[in-house]
Length: 339
Length: 284
Image 1 (cartoon, rainbow over the protein chains, first blue to last red):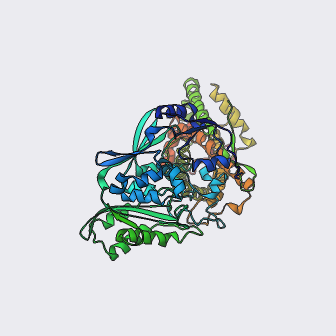
Image 2 (image 1 turned 30 degrees about the horizontal axis):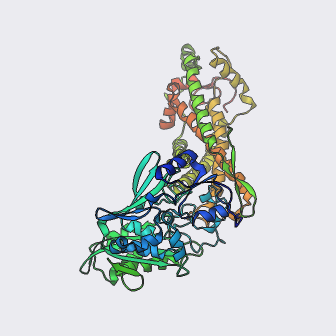
Image 3 (image 1 turned 90 degrees about the vertical axis):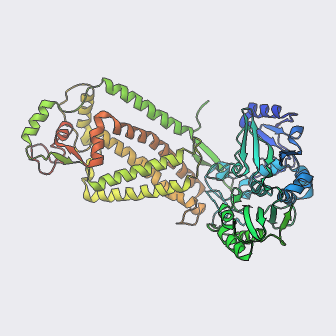
């Protein structure tokens, strides 16, 4: 059970000035080390005494992890770049409107000033049973308190529940997958690059984590290729509040349209499963189809096929269906842009 | 540095309960199985064999003229049960322990589906063995002490005159007993645990039992599971040992030869239909 304190618990704080130093620290302290970016997820865990790391490695002093730069026909974003910097960057706004919209939709201006793109992508689940410190599946135990006849599970998963029904809460993750971003991961053993789609993992892969990051690894940058630059983008986030809230369902899409025909599309929905869901069946269905109401309706129906609601979140099914429809139609209700 | 045998968690009511056994015990069971296999292999290289002397078998064969050439050891129904249970058991072990050793995949559905197959096959076996087989032939009791003594003497190289095995050798029956305890333990607890995961059968509800009861259920399930790792290793090992292949073949084809029957069994303790009585006590 969470015990909320105003005081931070005791831990050894490291603020490395270089990536190599940070990786060395993570290597040395292993599972005892906690990586902190903007701190917005970390402080909850630490102050609630749910996580009690012996060592915190704070990345704020590593200049090399900050900033947005052109990279070929795409861009590279340092993982410690704040959401505000991402949302206001001219390159992002010019080429990848779906990402700026995703970053802009996150939380509140104050939080976006402090929160980083790496942190937003790598944040942990917000299920309150899990965050309260109970020994649920995600915490290494053997029960899901959120999926019971009496549970409060309005915000939880309608897809891919494998014991745990928590969802990925990221606002920027769908945009990264829609843009076919590559995640650059470093450890003392070297570098590996994974597709954004594979960066996020479900409970079947590892029930205690939302991303593929292992102990000792850091997300250092996100590379967005020019593949979808200038496409038609659509973003919409439905939440209980207009600001400072996590999505109930959010969507990001990138579409190449020729006249009234959809040539190809990438459509990603989040907050409906433990990992952002790329709707590949819908993408295949709409490719080559006219962009009209009929296609949008069929795409919406296809998108929610297989959804299994919990006691209090059946509303997510029509919500997701309609968001997919609107993404196909583009336009008025969400945040559509043609860069 | 010692091994933690059990791991603990905190319930919403602040109780500290066991969540499961320590998965270190998986490795204990695995390495115990490996050590046993290695030790037994070495022992078998050096030990005497316990089958009946060739001349004695010749004499018995001449005496028991009514014995058929092929003697049924396992009916088709019994063999089907065995192989279905084996497939279910291996699926259960792989789906439960591969994720623990780092091979990650969506294992839960496969696990409970295999568990249901195992539960159904066990139920079938209980009914089949109770009403259509010689129920007591697989169990052990004080009556087996003479056979135990004789088998030990034979293993040590002596020519013990005591009884040969009936239908099932003593080792077979002891193994069956261990499998009954661990298999039923894992299956019964597993059926309860299905109430905690999403299946088409129930609404998930962890509150049907008290947290402490659940905690012991998970501990029992895990303990039975890791024990089954070692037991399954031993079973497969014996199944592929050269001197046991005749038994494994009988589980595939259903029969053993007349010669194998006379070499390894006591005809007075495992009566075969069609054979002439040769004296001794009635068949078990």
